[in-house]
Length: 307
Image (cartoon, rainbow, N blue to C red; front, side):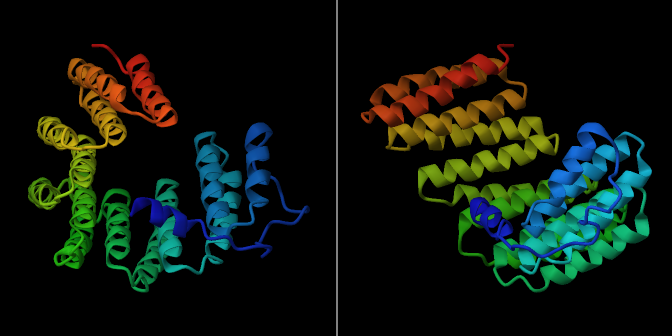
């Protein structure tokens, strides 16, 4: 589902001018940042232009270029107004709100978040709507320090997916919600929702999809600083991965799990799993696929810390 969402966010919209795009507009910053600003202005996709301009604004803020950051945010806001798709619109306005809050513009952040929430209300697909709510909740709770309202939004997201038939989607959303609860210091709610996510993931019959869901849940647990729980989840994910009949899929999944084990601080376990994945590649008959799998596994062998 995440790939679908990314694809939807990148719907092209051509040749609509934004405020400040003309050659007479001031150029924030200097050097590489000014070049990034100009390059961002030339992006024809409104969503992507807004995101790139917000990245430039963040860089300018770090460089203490207040005037440049303000100009970039103004242009990003103009681009965001052109995004019509409700999923893309909610996402880019949530990012705008987060950036405005980080820049210290609390009023503007609240205004952007209000627009994001309006766009969320127009999203029809359940899983996408729940994800968008969770994203809004994180900004509300973490950036704007309104944990109570953020928790209400997260509970709304939980309700949306309560009856979702797709267990993979349900597990994915609940993992995101749980991670967000943890980020706004709602520990008991995070633990409860992680349990629900793992229950949904464990109910998936297909071993590849089950392993995917468990690995995603573990990654969220690592982000939420629940390392011991994440290691247990990754153990379950590896057990499911070993049930994948296709050796190509099994090798890649074991490699993914090894990467997460490394992030959890279990370097030795990660390399043992990579050794196992490397042996699995021997069973791949297609030369091209075998090469892809070996490249992935051996790249991790070389890049992940040994201890």
